[in-house]
Image (tube, rainbow over all chains, first blue to last red; front, top):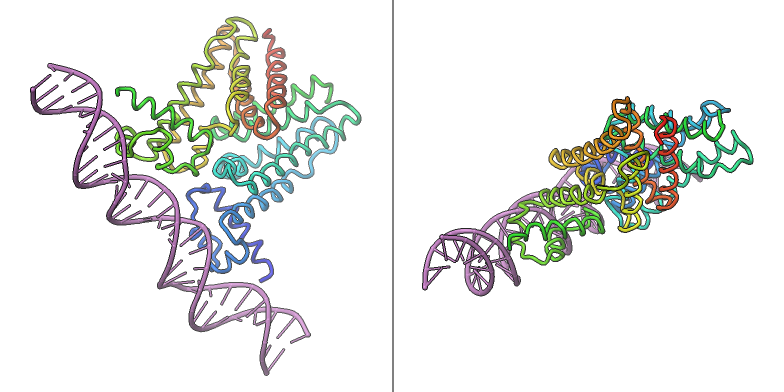
Length: 183
Length: 183
DNA sequence: GCAAAGGTAGAGTGATCGTTCTACTTTTCT
DNA sequence: AGAAAAGTAGAACGATCACTCTACCTTTGC
Protein backbone atom coordinates (compact mmCIF):
# COMPACT_ATOMS: atom_id res chain seq x y z
CA UNK A 1 0.00 0.00 0.00
CA UNK A 2 1.06 3.56 -0.62
CA UNK A 3 -0.05 4.75 2.82
CA UNK A 4 1.82 2.07 4.72
CA UNK A 5 4.33 4.56 5.98
CA UNK A 6 1.59 6.80 7.32
CA UNK A 7 -0.12 3.86 9.02
CA UNK A 8 3.14 2.82 10.67
CA UNK A 9 3.88 6.38 11.80
CA UNK A 10 0.47 6.63 13.45
CA UNK A 11 1.12 3.44 15.34
CA UNK A 12 4.66 4.48 16.30
CA UNK A 13 3.31 7.68 17.82
CA UNK A 14 0.66 5.73 19.71
CA UNK A 15 3.15 3.18 21.02
CA UNK A 16 5.74 5.69 22.16
CA UNK A 17 3.14 7.96 23.76
CA UNK A 18 1.52 5.28 25.80
CA UNK A 19 4.54 3.28 26.90
CA UNK A 20 7.52 5.58 26.65
CA UNK A 21 10.60 5.27 24.49
CA UNK A 22 12.97 3.09 26.46
CA UNK A 23 10.49 0.32 27.09
CA UNK A 24 9.48 -0.06 23.44
CA UNK A 25 11.83 -2.29 21.52
CA UNK A 26 11.77 -2.49 17.74
CA UNK A 27 10.03 -5.86 17.90
CA UNK A 28 7.22 -4.39 20.02
CA UNK A 29 6.86 -1.51 17.59
CA UNK A 30 6.69 -3.95 14.70
CA UNK A 31 3.96 -5.96 16.40
CA UNK A 32 2.02 -2.81 17.25
CA UNK A 33 2.07 -1.63 13.66
CA UNK A 34 1.27 -5.16 12.45
CA UNK A 35 3.88 -5.20 9.71
CA UNK A 36 6.96 -7.29 9.03
CA UNK A 37 10.33 -6.25 10.37
CA UNK A 38 11.56 -5.78 6.82
CA UNK A 39 8.79 -3.35 5.95
CA UNK A 40 9.25 -1.40 9.15
CA UNK A 41 12.95 -0.95 8.38
CA UNK A 42 12.21 -0.09 4.77
CA UNK A 43 10.21 2.96 5.86
CA UNK A 44 12.20 3.80 8.99
CA UNK A 45 15.75 2.54 8.55
CA UNK A 46 16.74 2.82 12.21
CA UNK A 47 15.20 3.09 15.64
CA UNK A 48 16.12 6.76 15.71
CA UNK A 49 14.24 7.26 12.43
CA UNK A 50 11.20 5.60 14.05
CA UNK A 51 11.33 8.06 16.92
CA UNK A 52 11.66 10.98 14.55
CA UNK A 53 8.80 9.64 12.46
CA UNK A 54 6.58 9.47 15.54
CA UNK A 55 7.53 13.01 16.55
CA UNK A 56 6.85 14.41 13.08
CA UNK A 57 3.50 12.68 13.06
CA UNK A 58 2.64 14.14 16.44
CA UNK A 59 3.79 17.60 15.33
CA UNK A 60 1.30 17.58 12.46
CA UNK A 61 -1.49 16.11 14.56
CA UNK A 62 -1.02 18.62 17.36
CA UNK A 63 -1.15 21.69 15.14
CA UNK A 64 -4.28 20.32 13.48
CA UNK A 65 -5.67 19.99 16.97
CA UNK A 66 -4.84 23.60 17.83
CA UNK A 67 -6.30 25.10 14.67
CA UNK A 68 -9.46 27.17 14.60
CA UNK A 69 -11.30 28.58 17.60
CA UNK A 70 -12.51 32.13 18.29
CA UNK A 71 -11.10 34.59 15.79
CA UNK A 72 -10.86 37.70 17.94
CA UNK A 73 -10.09 38.98 21.40
CA UNK A 74 -8.29 37.32 24.29
CA UNK A 75 -10.12 34.09 23.49
CA UNK A 76 -8.26 33.89 20.17
CA UNK A 77 -4.94 34.06 21.98
CA UNK A 78 -5.96 31.66 24.73
CA UNK A 79 -7.39 29.07 22.35
CA UNK A 80 -4.23 26.90 22.18
CA UNK A 81 -4.19 26.63 25.97
CA UNK A 82 -7.86 25.61 25.97
CA UNK A 83 -7.12 22.99 23.35
CA UNK A 84 -4.14 21.73 25.34
CA UNK A 85 -6.53 21.28 28.25
CA UNK A 86 -8.81 19.20 26.01
CA UNK A 87 -5.82 17.20 24.77
CA UNK A 88 -4.67 16.41 28.29
CA UNK A 89 -8.15 15.15 29.04
CA UNK A 90 -8.20 12.81 26.06
CA UNK A 91 -4.86 11.06 26.09
CA UNK A 92 -3.00 9.16 28.75
CA UNK A 93 -0.95 11.94 30.23
CA UNK A 94 2.72 11.05 30.04
CA UNK A 95 4.06 14.57 29.64
CA UNK A 96 5.38 16.03 26.42
CA UNK A 97 6.38 13.41 23.83
CA UNK A 98 9.03 15.73 22.41
CA UNK A 99 10.69 16.52 25.72
CA UNK A 100 10.56 12.86 26.70
CA UNK A 101 12.35 11.92 23.51
CA UNK A 102 14.94 14.61 24.05
CA UNK A 103 15.46 13.52 27.63
CA UNK A 104 16.21 10.02 26.49
CA UNK A 105 18.53 10.85 23.59
CA UNK A 106 20.24 14.10 24.55
CA UNK A 107 23.06 13.37 22.12
CA UNK A 108 20.98 12.91 18.99
CA UNK A 109 21.20 16.04 16.89
CA UNK A 110 18.39 14.84 14.64
CA UNK A 111 15.95 14.38 17.52
CA UNK A 112 16.96 17.69 19.09
CA UNK A 113 16.25 19.42 15.77
CA UNK A 114 12.72 18.01 15.55
CA UNK A 115 12.02 19.01 19.15
CA UNK A 116 13.31 22.53 18.66
CA UNK A 117 11.35 22.93 15.44
CA UNK A 118 8.12 21.83 17.09
CA UNK A 119 8.54 24.14 20.06
CA UNK A 120 9.57 27.07 17.89
CA UNK A 121 6.44 26.52 15.83
CA UNK A 122 4.37 26.55 19.01
CA UNK A 123 5.93 29.79 20.23
CA UNK A 124 5.18 31.26 16.80
CA UNK A 125 1.58 30.20 17.13
CA UNK A 126 1.21 32.46 20.17
CA UNK A 127 3.09 35.29 18.45
CA UNK A 128 0.81 35.12 15.40
CA UNK A 129 -2.36 35.10 17.45
CA UNK A 130 -1.19 38.07 19.51
CA UNK A 131 -0.29 39.97 16.34
CA UNK A 132 -3.79 39.39 15.00
CA UNK A 133 -5.42 40.58 18.19
CA UNK A 134 -3.11 43.49 18.93
CA UNK A 135 -1.47 44.44 15.65
CA UNK A 136 1.74 46.39 15.90
CA UNK A 137 1.93 46.10 19.66
CA UNK A 138 5.09 44.93 21.42
CA UNK A 139 3.86 41.55 22.64
CA UNK A 140 7.04 39.44 22.45
CA UNK A 141 7.31 38.90 26.19
CA UNK A 142 3.61 38.00 26.35
CA UNK A 143 4.09 35.29 23.75
CA UNK A 144 6.97 33.87 25.80
CA UNK A 145 4.80 33.86 28.89
CA UNK A 146 2.00 32.00 27.11
CA UNK A 147 4.47 29.50 25.73
CA UNK A 148 5.87 28.95 29.22
CA UNK A 149 2.36 28.41 30.57
CA UNK A 150 1.73 25.86 27.83
CA UNK A 151 4.85 23.92 28.82
CA UNK A 152 4.12 24.26 32.52
CA UNK A 153 0.56 23.07 32.11
CA UNK A 154 1.72 19.95 30.28
CA UNK A 155 4.11 18.99 33.07
CA UNK A 156 1.94 20.10 35.97
CA UNK A 157 -0.95 18.02 34.63
CA UNK A 158 1.11 14.87 35.25
CA UNK A 159 1.91 15.93 38.77
CA UNK A 160 -1.15 17.62 40.12
CA UNK A 161 -3.87 16.53 37.75
CA UNK A 162 -5.31 18.07 34.64
CA UNK A 163 -7.98 20.21 36.33
CA UNK A 164 -5.61 21.96 38.71
CA UNK A 165 -3.00 22.53 36.03
CA UNK A 166 -5.58 23.84 33.60
CA UNK A 167 -7.05 26.31 36.07
CA UNK A 168 -3.63 27.53 37.21
CA UNK A 169 -2.42 28.10 33.65
CA UNK A 170 -5.61 29.77 32.44
CA UNK A 171 -5.73 32.02 35.46
CA UNK A 172 -2.16 33.19 34.94
CA UNK A 173 -2.70 33.58 31.19
CA UNK A 174 -5.85 35.70 31.61
CA UNK A 175 -4.09 37.87 34.19
CA UNK A 176 -1.18 38.43 31.82
CA UNK A 177 -3.48 39.38 28.95
CA UNK A 178 -5.60 41.67 31.14
CA UNK A 179 -2.47 43.42 32.39
CA UNK A 180 -1.55 44.06 28.75
CA UNK A 181 -5.04 45.43 28.08
CA UNK A 182 -6.10 42.59 25.80
CA UNK A 183 -9.69 41.53 26.41
CA UNK B 1 34.99 4.61 54.20
CA UNK B 2 31.68 5.36 55.82
CA UNK B 3 30.79 8.07 53.31
CA UNK B 4 31.39 5.95 50.23
CA UNK B 5 27.69 5.74 49.55
CA UNK B 6 27.36 9.51 49.68
CA UNK B 7 30.33 9.97 47.37
CA UNK B 8 28.87 7.53 44.87
CA UNK B 9 25.44 9.18 45.04
CA UNK B 10 26.98 12.56 44.28
CA UNK B 11 28.70 11.14 41.26
CA UNK B 12 25.58 9.30 40.08
CA UNK B 13 23.62 12.54 40.17
CA UNK B 14 26.35 14.31 38.24
CA UNK B 15 26.58 11.57 35.60
CA UNK B 16 22.85 11.26 35.03
CA UNK B 17 22.33 15.03 34.92
CA UNK B 18 25.01 15.72 32.39
CA UNK B 19 24.53 12.76 30.05
CA UNK B 20 20.99 11.53 30.58
CA UNK B 21 19.81 8.17 31.83
CA UNK B 22 19.71 5.97 28.75
CA UNK B 23 23.23 6.72 27.64
CA UNK B 24 24.83 5.94 31.00
CA UNK B 25 25.50 2.27 31.46
CA UNK B 26 26.44 0.79 34.82
CA UNK B 27 30.08 0.48 33.74
CA UNK B 28 30.23 4.20 32.91
CA UNK B 29 28.67 5.02 36.28
CA UNK B 30 31.23 2.82 38.01
CA UNK B 31 34.09 4.55 36.23
CA UNK B 32 32.66 7.98 37.02
CA UNK B 33 32.39 7.20 40.71
CA UNK B 34 35.84 5.57 40.65
CA UNK B 35 34.82 2.50 42.62
CA UNK B 36 34.72 -1.20 41.88
CA UNK B 37 31.63 -2.79 40.42
CA UNK B 38 31.19 -4.83 43.59
CA UNK B 39 31.16 -1.75 45.81
CA UNK B 40 28.76 0.07 43.52
CA UNK B 41 26.34 -2.84 43.68
CA UNK B 42 26.78 -3.15 47.44
CA UNK B 43 25.40 0.35 47.95
CA UNK B 44 22.98 0.39 45.03
CA UNK B 45 21.92 -3.17 44.28
CA UNK B 46 20.43 -2.45 40.87
CA UNK B 47 20.49 0.15 38.16
CA UNK B 48 17.06 1.32 39.27
CA UNK B 49 18.43 1.81 42.79
CA UNK B 50 21.23 3.93 41.30
CA UNK B 51 18.68 6.15 39.58
CA UNK B 52 16.67 6.49 42.77
CA UNK B 53 19.84 7.26 44.72
CA UNK B 54 20.69 10.04 42.28
CA UNK B 55 17.18 11.48 42.52
CA UNK B 56 17.18 11.42 46.32
CA UNK B 57 20.54 13.14 46.34
CA UNK B 58 19.25 15.82 43.99
CA UNK B 59 16.09 16.25 46.08
CA UNK B 60 18.14 17.09 49.16
CA UNK B 61 20.56 19.32 47.24
CA UNK B 62 17.78 21.26 45.57
CA UNK B 63 15.92 22.08 48.76
CA UNK B 64 19.16 23.20 50.37
CA UNK B 65 19.58 25.42 47.35
CA UNK B 66 16.09 26.91 47.77
CA UNK B 67 16.41 27.62 51.49
CA UNK B 68 16.71 31.09 52.94
CA UNK B 69 16.11 34.34 51.09
CA UNK B 70 13.94 37.33 52.06
CA UNK B 71 11.68 36.52 54.99
CA UNK B 72 8.69 38.73 54.18
CA UNK B 73 6.55 40.06 51.36
CA UNK B 74 6.21 38.93 47.78
CA UNK B 75 9.98 38.42 47.63
CA UNK B 76 9.68 35.63 50.19
CA UNK B 77 7.21 33.81 47.98
CA UNK B 78 9.14 34.45 44.78
CA UNK B 79 12.48 33.34 46.23
CA UNK B 80 12.31 29.73 44.95
CA UNK B 81 11.75 30.99 41.41
CA UNK B 82 14.72 33.33 41.75
CA UNK B 83 16.85 30.45 42.97
CA UNK B 84 15.66 28.26 40.13
CA UNK B 85 16.87 30.99 37.79
CA UNK B 86 20.28 30.87 39.47
CA UNK B 87 20.30 27.07 39.26
CA UNK B 88 19.54 27.11 35.56
CA UNK B 89 22.45 29.46 35.08
CA UNK B 90 24.89 27.20 36.90
CA UNK B 91 24.24 23.72 35.57
CA UNK B 92 24.08 22.32 32.07
CA UNK B 93 20.41 22.67 31.38
CA UNK B 94 18.95 19.31 30.50
CA UNK B 95 15.49 19.88 31.94
CA UNK B 96 14.19 18.38 35.14
CA UNK B 97 16.13 15.31 36.29
CA UNK B 98 13.02 13.89 37.94
CA UNK B 99 10.77 14.24 34.92
CA UNK B 100 13.50 12.87 32.69
CA UNK B 101 13.78 9.79 34.87
CA UNK B 102 10.04 9.35 34.90
CA UNK B 103 9.88 9.75 31.13
CA UNK B 104 12.37 6.97 30.71
CA UNK B 105 10.91 4.50 33.20
CA UNK B 106 7.17 5.17 33.24
CA UNK B 107 6.53 1.69 34.61
CA UNK B 108 8.74 1.88 37.67
CA UNK B 109 6.58 2.51 40.72
CA UNK B 110 9.64 3.25 42.85
CA UNK B 111 10.89 5.98 40.54
CA UNK B 112 7.40 7.46 40.17
CA UNK B 113 7.13 7.64 43.95
CA UNK B 114 10.38 9.59 44.30
CA UNK B 115 9.32 11.99 41.56
CA UNK B 116 5.92 12.58 43.07
CA UNK B 117 7.39 13.11 46.54
CA UNK B 118 9.87 15.68 45.24
CA UNK B 119 7.23 17.63 43.33
CA UNK B 120 4.76 17.49 46.22
CA UNK B 121 7.47 18.86 48.48
CA UNK B 122 8.06 21.68 46.02
CA UNK B 123 4.37 22.56 45.83
CA UNK B 124 4.33 22.59 49.64
CA UNK B 125 7.25 24.99 49.66
CA UNK B 126 5.12 27.55 47.82
CA UNK B 127 2.14 26.88 50.09
CA UNK B 128 4.22 27.39 53.22
CA UNK B 129 5.74 30.61 51.96
CA UNK B 130 2.32 31.97 51.00
CA UNK B 131 0.93 31.03 54.39
CA UNK B 132 3.73 32.96 56.09
CA UNK B 133 3.16 36.04 53.96
CA UNK B 134 -0.64 35.98 53.93
CA UNK B 135 -1.71 33.93 56.95
CA UNK B 136 -5.20 32.52 56.84
CA UNK B 137 -5.81 33.66 53.27
CA UNK B 138 -7.13 31.28 50.63
CA UNK B 139 -4.00 30.98 48.50
CA UNK B 140 -4.23 27.39 47.26
CA UNK B 141 -4.69 28.30 43.61
CA UNK B 142 -1.84 30.80 43.84
CA UNK B 143 0.49 28.08 45.08
CA UNK B 144 -0.52 25.90 42.13
CA UNK B 145 0.19 28.75 39.75
CA UNK B 146 3.65 29.33 41.21
CA UNK B 147 4.38 25.62 41.03
CA UNK B 148 3.29 25.59 37.40
CA UNK B 149 5.53 28.55 36.66
CA UNK B 150 8.44 26.71 38.29
CA UNK B 151 7.90 23.68 36.05
CA UNK B 152 7.34 25.81 32.98
CA UNK B 153 10.49 27.83 33.58
CA UNK B 154 12.57 24.66 33.85
CA UNK B 155 11.36 23.37 30.50
CA UNK B 156 11.21 26.72 28.71
CA UNK B 157 14.84 27.41 29.70
CA UNK B 158 15.93 24.44 27.55
CA UNK B 159 13.93 25.68 24.61
CA UNK B 160 14.19 29.44 24.60
CA UNK B 161 17.11 30.11 26.87
CA UNK B 162 17.39 30.83 30.55
CA UNK B 163 17.00 34.62 30.34
CA UNK B 164 13.74 34.56 28.40
CA UNK B 165 12.26 31.80 30.53
CA UNK B 166 13.26 33.55 33.74
CA UNK B 167 11.73 36.87 32.71
CA UNK B 168 8.52 35.26 31.47
CA UNK B 169 8.04 33.25 34.68
CA UNK B 170 8.89 36.12 37.02
CA UNK B 171 6.63 38.49 35.14
CA UNK B 172 3.68 36.11 35.38
CA UNK B 173 4.42 35.31 39.02
CA UNK B 174 4.59 38.97 40.05
CA UNK B 175 1.36 39.69 38.20
CA UNK B 176 -0.38 36.82 39.99
CA UNK B 177 0.83 38.01 43.41
CA UNK B 178 -0.10 41.61 42.70
CA UNK B 179 -3.58 40.54 41.60
CA UNK B 180 -3.92 38.76 44.96
CA UNK B 181 -2.77 41.91 46.75
CA UNK B 182 0.52 40.45 47.95
CA UNK B 183 3.39 42.94 47.70
C1' DG C 1 0.41 -11.25 -18.67
C1' DC C 2 4.10 -10.32 -16.26
C1' DA C 3 7.88 -7.99 -14.31
C1' DA C 4 8.81 -4.99 -10.57
C1' DA C 5 7.72 -3.16 -6.33
C1' DG C 6 6.35 -3.91 -1.98
C1' DG C 7 4.69 -7.07 1.19
C1' DT C 8 5.12 -11.42 4.95
C1' DA C 9 7.63 -14.66 8.18
C1' DG C 10 11.08 -15.45 11.01
C1' DA C 11 15.84 -17.24 11.88
C1' DG C 12 20.51 -15.47 12.71
C1' DT C 13 24.24 -12.16 14.22
C1' DG C 14 27.07 -9.35 16.76
C1' DA C 15 27.25 -6.16 20.24
C1' DT C 16 25.86 -4.30 24.57
C1' DC C 17 24.41 -4.42 29.11
C1' DG C 18 22.92 -5.54 33.86
C1' DT C 19 24.37 -8.55 37.13
C1' DT C 20 27.13 -12.12 39.55
C1' DC C 21 31.24 -14.38 41.03
C1' DT C 22 36.10 -15.48 42.24
C1' DA C 23 40.26 -14.09 44.28
C1' DC C 24 42.68 -10.86 46.76
C1' DT C 25 43.86 -6.49 49.69
C1' DT C 26 42.93 -2.71 52.98
C1' DT C 27 40.66 -0.54 56.72
C1' DT C 28 38.27 -0.46 61.11
C1' DC C 29 36.91 -1.84 65.68
C1' DT C 30 37.57 -4.23 69.96
C1' DA D 1 46.62 -8.75 67.18
C1' DG D 2 43.21 -10.41 64.67
C1' DA D 3 38.63 -11.01 62.91
C1' DA D 4 35.12 -8.76 60.43
C1' DA D 5 33.79 -5.38 57.30
C1' DA D 6 34.57 -3.01 53.22
C1' DG D 7 37.29 -2.20 49.35
C1' DT D 8 39.75 -3.43 44.39
C1' DA D 9 40.07 -5.79 39.80
C1' DG D 10 38.01 -7.79 36.31
C1' DA D 11 36.39 -12.19 34.04
C1' DA D 12 32.11 -14.55 32.93
C1' DC D 13 27.10 -15.20 32.16
C1' DG D 14 22.66 -14.78 30.39
C1' DA D 15 19.49 -11.95 28.32
C1' DT D 16 18.12 -8.45 25.29
C1' DC D 17 18.22 -5.73 21.36
C1' DA D 18 18.97 -3.34 16.95
C1' DC D 19 19.59 -4.83 12.71
C1' DT D 20 20.40 -8.13 8.56
C1' DC D 21 19.38 -11.80 5.59
C1' DT D 22 17.06 -15.67 3.21
C1' DA D 23 13.06 -17.39 1.12
C1' DC D 24 8.71 -16.72 -0.41
C1' DC D 25 4.07 -14.36 -1.57
C1' DT D 26 0.81 -10.47 -3.34
C1' DT D 27 -0.50 -6.48 -5.48
C1' DT D 28 -0.18 -3.13 -9.25
C1' DG D 29 1.02 -0.53 -13.60
C1' DC D 30 1.90 -0.94 -18.26
